[in-house]
Image 1 (tube, rainbow, N blue to C red):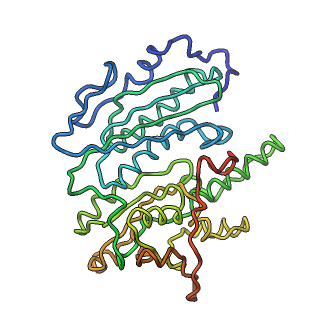
Image 2: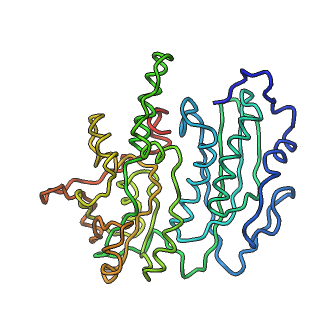
Length: 356
């Protein structure tokens, strides 16, 4: 993290609010024809071109959502964008624009903000979205980043959380639990460093799970994959707060119950071995860990043959009648374990070490 230790670093006061915004955003280009007016005017102007507009926003606060003791600022900027684009992907829409607002304490020089915006620019370039506005203000309690993301899609292609029916298949992309295990390694090594700053962090061999935590990716690619398979999910959500929590959201919104089969939950071998190393149950990490930013969705049983052999999709369960509840079917048995929403809740998880 960049602190006021170098006399050559530039204080924010050297630019002022509007000069700072201009400095941080002057090199951003635009990819979308729907962007008509962007930074520099009172409002951005977006032309939806006959499509529906989907909008989402997330706040990331220092000490609650991230720890600058081990999170690089460029990674933080990238991840802040991805967190929001994941919500757009969960609606089966195309992300097109973002707005960025920062609350900054005086300990951050301009160079630190340049690092954050470099990460934001990387995400914009990768996902082909336009930065069209935002705000900056001072903060007395550290760094706060708020991103608003906008997406466009035709009405008939949008997917909500409300369409699942009994007997629908429950499907997830990628693998789960890796981001949470990456967080555990970062927290472990950070604690060792605080106890003895001369100790070198032991990060070798944990690359995949560290990347899952520090530089996740939004599954905007799934929209194309589903179209090619001719599958229109009946409901969908992104896995930001843990598989269990997201399944319960689909259950509540669609008024169905779910059965998830423990042996079907996809996990990377490094996630499993790291969990065992730290005496954690890897399945519980997948159920409650969060921040994987995969997509969880339901499909009609008739689509089973289309999706069963796809390498990026795993069928992990099915929907039942609402009054049958939500349960994990234990591995190798018919024991039913109630699903509980033990994932992240900003108003319940007070310990900042519980989430990056």
